[in-house]
Image 1 (cartoon, rainbow, N blue to C red):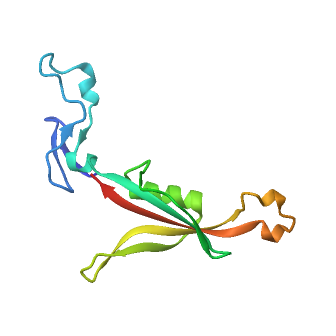
Image 2 (image 1 turned 135 degrees about the vertical axis):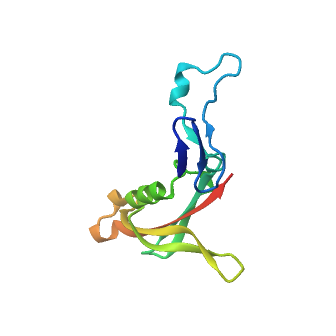
Image 3 (image 1 turned 180 degrees about the horizontal axis):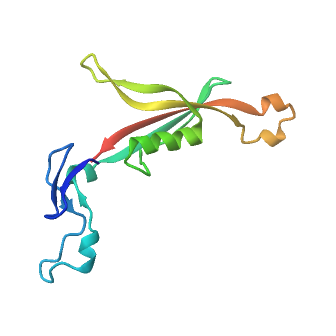
Length: 146
């Protein structure tokens, strides 16, 4: 979230939305400011209200079937960069982006596709070491929810 802040007046505007920044915990009207008010962060209401929702789709590329779809769920972060880095650590290298047709002839990126060789859940039972792993493709889709 980008902010432009005048530190002395504790006022500012969001450089993305142009909205006036608000304190995370404003001073109590009856009791006045508390000592903790100095630590209050100024945030943009529009930036704070945006939450990332993610959905995962799992594909076994080796055998050619889809084996798992998650429901839309709230992400652990609202930062796309952090979401991407975490997904790359967990699901392997990014091989492509996921796009969605917007209907006006333009496509918008809505996620990434990751690829990694992983063990089957029952790999300890498979005698041939070459057959204990498969290529797993994971499609991560994201959308903003307010």
